[in-house]
Length: 604
Image (cartoon, rainbow, N blue to C red; front, side):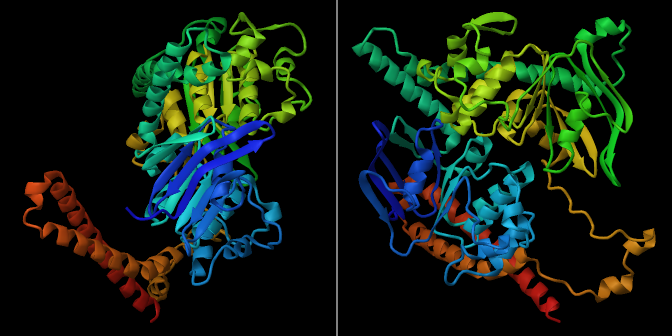
């Protein structure tokens, strides 16, 4: 096995009297794909900063292979001192790095390079920071929540880009699908220590649950007393996952019902009075439209949302999702069409900006309003301490001021407040932001138990698959279509997922004929290599050399006449690897030849 590029051994770090890291370890070998998982506040970001050389532990061994290039993506990048995003990205390049990579990656991420960092949105900041760490193609990439503030097209592009790199990668993320698609090993940071499994994230939760179950059994052998509240926060995770598996089955049944309803439009006729309909019909939109100036944000769209439906709304940033959502719940009047809202509709929404929280208020008072020990949840009284426990808060935190809460804890509190309000329509706009994986399980459970209707805007593909019965997708140019099922079902039905919003033309043609170039003009225009093609043309020779070396190595192993007799499994594995490397080499050579021909044509 190749020596590690980064090795952290027996890392200890305390904040005051509280140990954050207690013997944590991390080893990163060339080409590895590792996901680092753990509860909010467990020290994942701190451990990653130590690996990047930014943070210092109290004690422990740190080794970085001499000459290895390491790039770290923080959650909050620092743009100070840079006039443009291009200057910021180029500053991350090292000696010998290709300059064109900076502009190519900015272009791929939807930026021009001329943006002023002070004017960037959260999503644009994240894209610029990603371009900076990806441009050098480092030996090791340390990524802390790389999908934060990104829309679905950007997340799927990032997945593809990371898969194509030879860099070793360590990822912290709450996006299950992202981790499943990229990781090959998992490091679990729990109570200051790390445990590792050489399998991707898809195997992690079952492995973790087995470890916790075994740990709980051993604990009960030593002590038969009641398990402390703090232990429930860990061991309750297993029970929630098992309940969620059952609920996924119920969700699939809802999706089948929804699909059958969509296949028979007009088959159900509402003949009862308005008062009776309001209990079953929540929202009905007929041919609603919305424009801002000359821009058509929502073209004629119709839908019927019934009591108990869970509807997801997906699309790239700027596609009009929030506008459509506001029209559906009556916060924004459509320009055309009609929105019919059921009588006595009570809406509860999640305040993603947390602006309604007083930082000096305690958790207990934030839920009860400062009066009494109980609150009404789902029409039933519940003690505030029990309700806090449902959202993974400890009794000690009940009297703590809100200013000491982490981003994930604030998100949990806002969720608890929203679900405690009397409502029959729950509107969740990006509810998974800042939530750890255990809290996402909790949120999934809460959505499943919610007795009313749910409208959900999210870029989290796995969460959509686990919660919604239908998806309204932005199709581009203000068009929206509804699909039965979750996000994976949407891909099956339309052949692709959410795609990036097309850039608007800088100038509109004065006549229809002006938009179509003449054949002569089209033929006289020389072909031009894109930044992506330029990069591929330069990097493919190195890729082909690597593949030839692999073929030679596998060929030498296969030349052993006794290999099959000694180790049939190794023979099969080597044979398959040899065939794959040869196929990859053939494809790379063919692509390189195509690009060389294109380059010659471009140069005249």
